[in-house]
Image 1 (cartoon, one colour):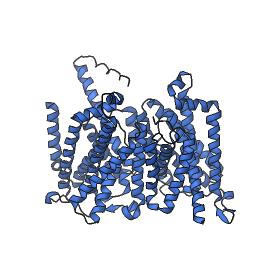
Image 2 (cartoon, chains in turn yellow, brown):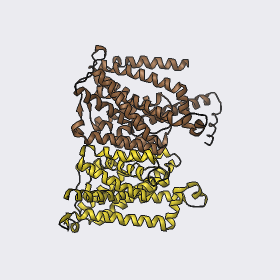
Image 3 (cartoon, rainbow over the protein chains, first blue to last red):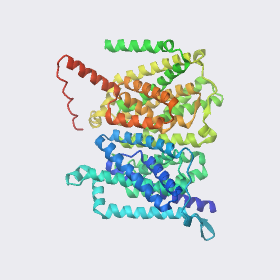
Image 4 (tube, each protein chain N blue to C red):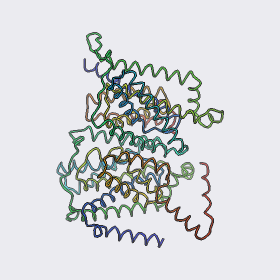
Length: 286
Length: 327
């Protein structure tokens, strides 16, 4: 019983982390029509930034903030100086993001060496929470809370604000959005920045759970891709549902059949592609 | 045509003569490696250059074949059965992957191939009991095709050259065939092609299977060359490298991927003896090539050559090709 409860909680918290990672990825994909293949590298960079700030004595929450801001800056630079000149060349943009991910990953290896960096949870949250005789890791519960807050904030942003309405218009029909005077190319920068900040912060928040190690980027990128394939590009709800589906499958997969954890991810992907190729909540992939 | 034929003969003679010119085993092995990667790049390029489909999971076929060969030989099967069964297995997986990834077009296709490639990588990495995980597994010996020993660098080079030439001929025939023409049709104008009665999905699917078949053959050569299989051989970097070879050389030609493979393989081998940071360089080449040389070296040089000739003859440069008609 203990096993199932703990694994369920682990799955939920991993799903929460995946939501932080893939919501921005999905939004940027929906609007800009390109999957940012450097997103896994952004996550890893965030994890290392966070770990570094914690190691030099910074507050954990400050570390998350710094990671988000730092990766956000990297994201803006990439969007402005590399993706922008390639506007219209979708294939080129995607491949460039892949090239960038290799560069970032190798720089991380250079700066932070090949040894994994473990990040301690903030001191207040290290003590397990006792509920009905079971011990729950407090930090993981807090991560779930953070993801829920992020989900609500993103929902309000997309659904209730002018900016959100413009983004949704761009996702639905870019030409019409341009036609009615929405500055779509400015939105590109905003959404790409949002995705980078979320990925960086997710990396920092994921530190105490997954640590920071070389190869973290290529571990996370396929998960984000599968979340978006499941949920549908550009859909916040899709990213939310997809994240938890992947979180449960991956976590229980690793716990029960460690050899086949990746193969288990394959199954929902096959099913969704067979019957709903546009994803559960998405429109047709561009 | 005659000029192409002459060029082909010259290249054939040169590649036959390679081991006489460079007697050092290291460089002969490097030449074999170039041919293996050139075949991989050519097989990616069937999808990329002729079908317009960007696959980021092509190294999976290297791995599927490689692991299958090692596991079957270790299980006691003879080399010939193993080779045939492995290629069939890998190509069958290719058919399955094709069915899945062709549920989407364009970027969706790219994402699904990437995810599939990473899943194959993940299985190779995690399934310790089967694949040896990160440590990899070793093939005990190279096969002896028709009783000929191919253990020396020289004989292996010729073995690779023969397989590569056969593959090159088949791929060349494919691109010149009516099927190749209809494939290029689906790349340019899928809607018109389907209106003309072609089954676009089927054409793309068959192409995917053919590409995975040649990828598997490259995998066969790869495992015979290295006698060792580990997840590193089928990582995302490997798939991306294969794609980069095709793009760097020029995806619209057969020569392009071969040149690209030669450049990348040489740079990688030379550079990694001096510095450890191959991935940064790979990433930089990627970014630079795509930003400044999107058509690749071979078409780029061809264009340059033509404009020089035209200038010498005092002709105005040819007008830019008419813009593409709307779909």
